[in-house]
Image (cartoon, rainbow, N blue to C red; front, side):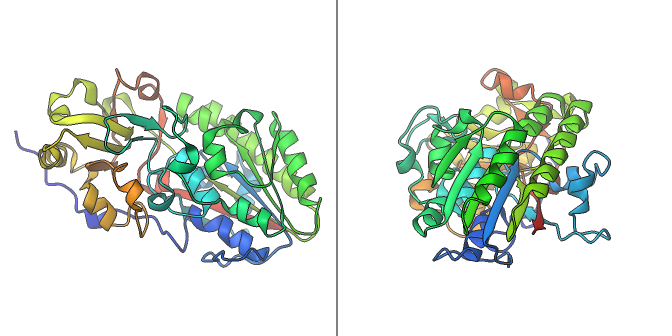
Length: 387
């Protein structure tokens, strides 16, 4: 069987770690508050009170495409309207667990180690779901670095997170978003009100708040759906509510963890029914648009060859060493993280998804997907409001 020529890996749009990525946001905010050891590659202006509002699943391209549903947020874009907004890169893969860890630690995935939706526990064929933290492993062994929130709290900054109470005790929160005080609030409106209140509670404060429902609607119905657009309208109202409640000397930054793309059924390849892609594969990790492929011992080269031949014209297909050398996971990959990365890493370039209907039944039915390095998934907004 003849296969098209694989795409050149040099064309992969590697995230802009260190200058314009999610992992650069919180250190820049903390530096403006005087927290020692924090960098400011984003060149954010200092503020006595700083708040980060992260909207799950609100990509830069989706936001720009919906000015009527999100008039307030679009007014903050870097356009003729005078906004100062700009796009950042989420990091690879562009998925929630990875991005939240990048935000909270201020580190790229190769350092914090949450390098995918599911990754292999090194030396085993066991996949760890890093969003649900299953199977359980010691969070602080898996991710040993302090968060920026912890460093800010130690520096005397009034620090807190305002989110759903469901997230307070999760391992992901512990390794990525802990430090200071966690406040659980169910409604988005209550979170916005409390975030503004906590900002005003001290002369120097750092507040994080989060909203996840936009992402849920995208997965369930797609970003080209009325349900998703309705949620974006709600996000716009929440952001404006928080902006109007900001106390003096505050900076509010609004961002997201990834964008999203709808993939049609005919553009989905079912790994569980594809003998060619499955040959030599011990376990399939990652997610539909960003796959970690772990080979049985001795089969890594053959797996790479097959995946390159079958999918290489539509996905960036790299060996572990090529992905690391290419900077996909950041400038440095810690030794403890090396084995979590697949023997082969495949990131979608075109409208394609590698699903697994038997092993990932829930994920395989999702309409909206993300994970790769395409602009629609990778670019997220950084919007600013100051008082």
